[in-house]
Image (cartoon, rainbow, N blue to C red; front, side, top):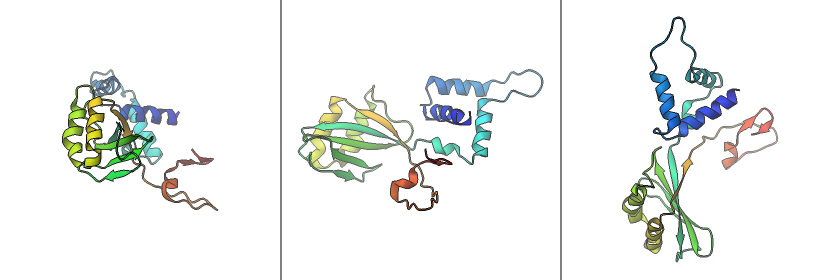
Amino acid sequence: MVENRFRWFGHVERRPVDSVVRRVDQMERRQTIRGRGRPKKTIREVIKKDLKINGLDKSMVDVPSRFVGLVLENCPCANHRHLILGDPSPVVFYPISSSEVRCLVDVPGQKVPSISNGEMAKYLKTVIAPQIPLELHDAFIAAVDKGNIRTMRNRSKPAASYPTPGAQLMGDAFNMGWNDRGII
């Protein structure tokens, strides 16, 4: 039961602030008229108690940034990988076929510029494109103009040590979830 509440809580918290689920949640918090006696416990109060009992924190569902993905076609550097430590965040290029390169731009913040009204294309052209190497620049602009832009959440999960007799964990292995029966 607690796991289902956590799943719902994470789902609601990751939604954009203007989504229906978040607006209903805000409406529930603003209700002030109540009857006699102790107020009924809200789902927020139950989740807050569950988080405290399990030693968890609301920040564990925060989305620090989003990846914006593009596919660059007929790219002259299709056999190379690039990492650009740009401002405000890194940009990664890697080949996905002999003539295509995937570009992932890390856009900081939970709310990214809108793709549908052209804000994202403008952001990519004005903020990111000037930092792209000349070899990739024209293909990058062409991919932005084509408009096949996708986004996905990017979360960081801090490493936690779970001592296991006979096992030595390194790198991303620390980020695997564990319970009393082993890996989740």
